[in-house]
Amino acid sequence: MKKILSLLLFVAVSFVGCKEKNQFNYPLETLYGTWQFKQVKFSPSEDYQTWLLTATYATFYSDGTYTGRGYFGNGKGTYETKGDDIITYVQGEEYATYTVLSLTGSRAELKMSMPGSSTNIWLICEKQN
Image (cartoon, rainbow, N blue to C red; front, top):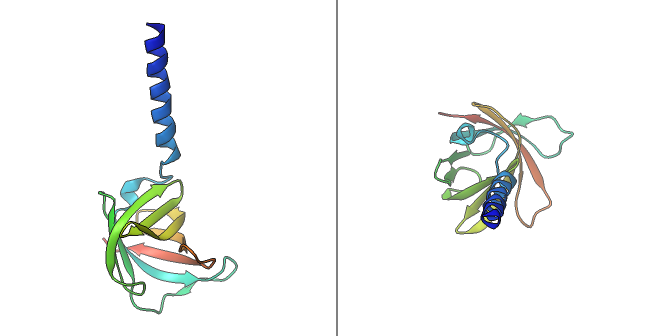
């Protein structure tokens, strides 16, 4: 009986430990919906400037999929959340990581990075729906 209780405790601790490791630091419901890029800067010390490029949107769905359209192209893929990061994938390959600096029901401040690039872009996004 003691061995069974120890095994159950081990399984429970392992499950909780894995869940906490991959947990998003914000309510997922806040992420779901369509976000439009509104402002941009290219270093942390700059001031934000109005996004003047092609209107750009990302829509995150509760099933782990997303769509994007605008400056970075039109397409769809999947995403996962870990800590402060939203990691997007297109055809199974990592496309971009958005590190959340702040996230509310209608506004997000993000740092965007792409695999293979040392350049980051900081964004202010507003929820459209």
